[in-house]
Image 1: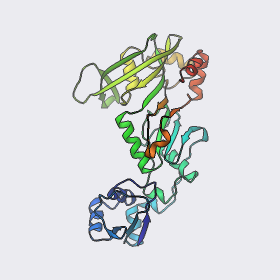
Image 2: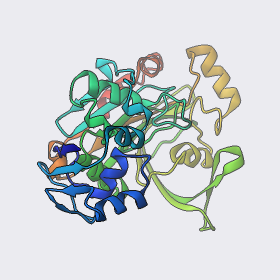
Image 3: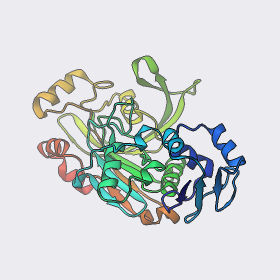
Image 4: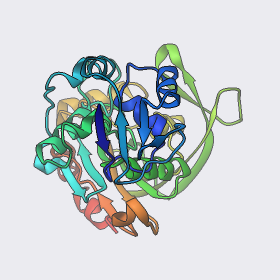
Amino acid sequence: MKEIVITARDAGQRLDKYLLRYLPLAGKGFLYKMMRKKNIVLNGRRAGGSEVLKEGDALRLFFSRETLEKFMGREAEQEVSYPALKPEEVLWEDSQVLAVNKPAGMLSQKAAPGDVSLVEYITGYLLETKALSPQELQSFHPGVANRLDRNTSGLILAGKTMAAAQDLARMFRERSMEKYYLALAAGTLEKPGRLSGYLAKEEQRNRAVVLRKPAPGASRIETAWEPLGTAEGMTLLKVELITGRTHQIRSHLASLGHPLAGDRKYGDPALNRRLYERYGLDRQFLHAWKICFPALSGALQGLDGRTLTAAPPPELEKILKAMNLWEAVQDGQG
């Protein structure tokens, strides 16, 4: 028999979903059968699976050790090593939430089983700092609440508990916060602007196409921007991502004739070559800069009214200073 006492980290989720995370190889039908037969009981009583777990709940699994290990999977039987974040990549944290400055070149989450993404680095950091124990990792796997393209740097949030992860997911889904990016775009943009459109995916080319009118499979998008400064025929923009779609900023600005500097997919090859030769820029100049949070409570109370800012990485800072645009970034912090 295995007894599990629910911690604050796992509280707030349905029992059946918790069991599927704890015993990923068991299957939902088997787990419901075990609950009916009282081989799985919650607080000494028969459970139906829809119960919402609370801190201190006692879950008992009347399985043999061999059966438990079989359904938990091989990873539960051996120690898995994770990479850890660098101290400077951690922007802010409390007991519920972790904010990270993702470097360019790193996946936000796995695209294939063998990938090492930011999620693995976050997991390693939480294990290293003992904010998460190997035992808790059997039922709770950290994940990111927002995603950035591999070659976009900047601010990403992760929940350190199930309640925080759920609340963060809801907040991003409802777009109740303000998200700002730094973007260096080709051409001169003298005035603030705001544009709506529809984003359609070209799956074979892994591209997004901006449409002016609704179309089947296209999602509505809205992007706003404010010029912070101009130099060398380019404009540094403070971009507000009002909706959040894959490649939205990159494709939206490109559709206006102002592609991002360094963008190989949507950009100007001649401009990209010049920037690579002069500054070594080998990716799109796009950085998730700031998130301004509304009034919050519960698991996200630590973010109540807070603004989190991720400083541009050294390779972008160097370019901005060389173009005399760094001061504009400082002025745009407010």
